[in-house]
Image (cartoon, helix red, strand yellow):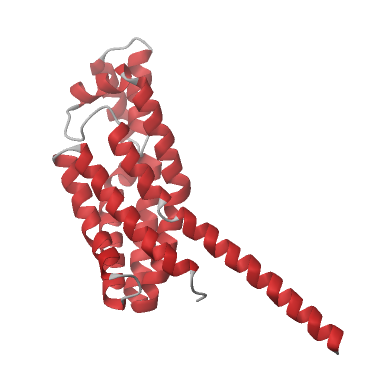
Length: 227
């Protein structure tokens, strides 16, 4: 009986250690996606308000920054889901419904952004570098927009992310599961991101950094408690 009890305790301790390691690993990844997007906003050689005739040559002329932006989008694609899950799990502690809906919408929005992210820049740069002109590159991009999946993904990622992150911020604020400053960072992050698209890319980067700060606080709360 004693040996059986000891064996059960050892198994439970091993399982608990594995779960704890998994939670910590997921928590470490949580702020990486927004940090990667902050880097992307500073790396891209154009402004989001540029017309195609302006930004297409910029992408092709500065392939160093363009290539860096592609790598940062890849980092976002493979880590952003962790941020949505971790922050959502912490938000659910204070507001189950808002936290769950916010987590689902943010996860879907991040996934849609990952799907849409590098395609346009890559197509534009490849067209110009192949020796074709800007009007041809614009026609290529219009053809890409003609695919329904591409059009839907491009249209949905902003509202999904905006609503999802907003609900996560509200749930964190109401539940007090993270410090108020962290919940406030999540709440204001996406409006700043959107404003940056019209004002300056450095402002866009600031919004993503605010989201990273909020996600990091949620990650600390997530890693320190077993649900």
